[in-house]
Picture 1 (cartoon, rainbow, N blue to C red):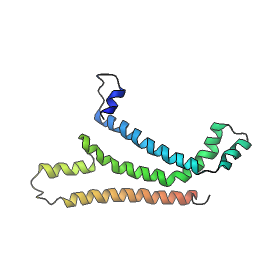
Picture 2 (picture 1 turned 90 degrees about the vertical axis):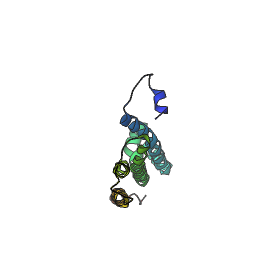
Picture 3 (picture 1 turned 60 degrees about the vertical axis):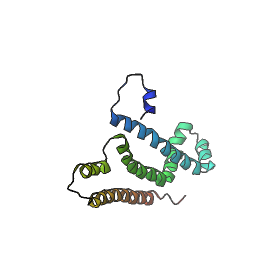
Picture 4 (picture 1 turned 90 degrees about the horizontal axis):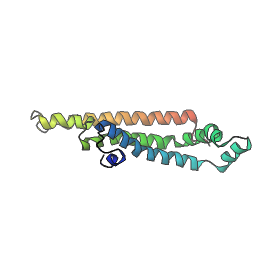
Length: 152
């Protein structure tokens, strides 16, 4: 948040949500790039040679042969980073933005009616996070079966 201000002209005012989106995009793009790099490293040299042997240039070989295979291999890592992104959204509460957990804290701190019985709200938030993450994980497993990524 503070570092982002150095990349813009002086006296530039950027909305808080836009700053969060920019910083989370840069942060998670590095992880996704590393996952895809791992997928590219997992391919054998023969795939690159096969693309050269049929006369494809670099762009065509990446588009039609290399990247589809690398992305298939990278599906578990991409889903892992995506689930981490979902969980990292709770960090925006540090900079005074509200997420699911922040919306729960608001009524608890501002009202005396709760009297310390707030575990139901946090339990519901945990259940929501679990359902979403579990659903994404199951979809990833289904997608891997459809693409047969385990058979190389």
